[in-house]
Image (cartoon, rainbow, N blue to C red; front, side, top):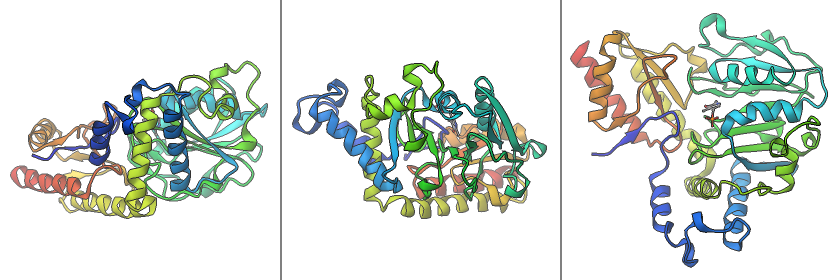
Length: 360
Ligand SMILES: *Cc1c(COP(=O)(O)O)cnc(C)c1O
């Protein structure tokens, strides 16, 4: 039986990448060593590290005046590092509140400075993206932070806000590399790796160089972007194996046509699943406004929540794993990141159809 893993994160990795890692596990390219055993200052690992950065730069078209860093502490530590490094003595920062991850970023930023919540979609239970012309922005804000894809709520921005001279900061943890972004529109992009990049244990940070070197005076060394940028993410021992795995994923993306090709598959996968939900006569229901539905995380509820347990059990038996919704939302959630093939979504849709027929 083919297994399809719909986990929100850590999430499915491309099968070919796992096979390559397996083949190279004991002896990387004739070095006689596993990547896990290599000095991070040795020529083998330095090559892996540089290649991963170069491939990410190529995939995303990252301009030369941006630094790419691999850091530890997941996306959560970025919630703290961003205000520490980017407030730059200014009075406040703008934050957009579109759901659970926005709220976490806002809560942490409040420890370091004043947060101006420019808009919130709490009025409709975080089920949509508020129109840009309703945002109460501060022209003097240190930066504006938003979450491009709310992993729990399943709400995704289909557009990039134009904040003029105010640096735009984006949490792209769950949709980075799933669609093209013009990096030059952003001051800083960050993403925990375990959704759409690689194994848990590292975060990717892409930052415009002019924003570096202005961290608050008491910023711990390990939380200062400039330290990591100057040290090429090797100020201390980096999460070498995670970076190696991420590098294999970048190569897999390049082999498969890059981000533009990936986006086309992602559009097809999302359409297949949302169409099935919408055509179920209410047996399944997705609460998110149609225009703002995520291509990566699809939350849906069964009309009769008493069937949730059966749905999950039978799905599991069919090899469709980890469909249980986030504990704060309930219901189901299918995460269909880059590494989820179209066939996996088709298998899920077939199962949903059968299940609805049995219980409808
Ligand atoms: C998963 C996730 C996070 C948290 O990531 P950690 O690596 O666990 O800290 C933050 N933001 C978004 C959008 C996420 O999906």
